[in-house]
Length: 379
Image 1: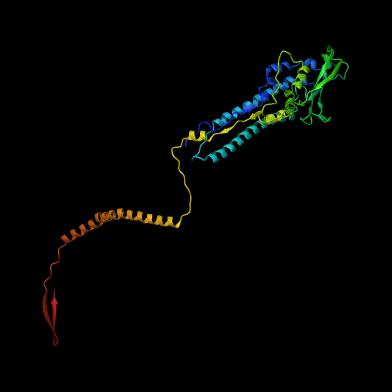
Image 2: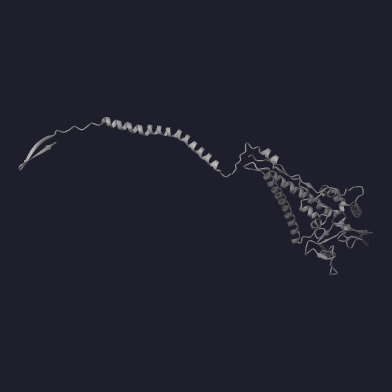
């Protein structure tokens, strides 16, 4: 059989629409970025503090999953399918199903392990987020002559969960809180604290489906995309973050055929590599046409019947008879030529060269012993 250069099993993955949406473009990411100096005066759960970074991460997750799938598909397409014999369509399809399941599970598990390693390493080493989502820095000056910058303490960031329970980032990375948009009234720059402050910070709106937490990665994976399917919710978000009015943003299409729903978390999407459909295909026709066998053979096993045994014996006897007719005359001729004739010729030559012995003369005499006379013969 000839090796197949391209596998008869193919994939054409289709990714979730979020990975082709406006929400992962650089235009959107730049427009939701907020002045960090203004955010110092607002609360830690203000969505504007993490919005730009969160959407950058979402864009990067789309990119990484697609790169991982593309890399594994390149390796898969280099795999040679070799079969000693032509296999049946049923067996081919069963093997193709096993191959597809194994390929999907392998690449999914590999990506999940890599992501989990990053999460565990970050939390295990208590790395500080540059957005201070897991740590609170507090400056103090216990001595009168010490400057404000001489003493900085870090404290564990505490979040209020959806069940109104306190959760500390030093204990677990799974602390999540629903973010909000706050109004900042009459901000002014304070020369003592070197930042903007406001006389009044008021809650405007909490964003459904989105969470902030100890680490941006965990918060994004815990969030869902339901707000981005709803025009009213998206409009409220755009107004809250003061998104430029001249830049149109299209919501996600909830009418598309999908295996997910609007409440599916980003973590669930990532666990499936952001893939909507694998579009895998196993073509037996491609396999058989590519192999192009020269000929096919088959064998079967059956029990011998009495008639079959009789026919076989007769055929065997007939075959032996023909063999004997060919071999016996040949063997006889060989014996006569190489064994019998040489022996006969040697015998004949010995008979011709042998001289018969000459008879000796015989004499007779008589001897008298007492009254008896004996006759003797001498040779």
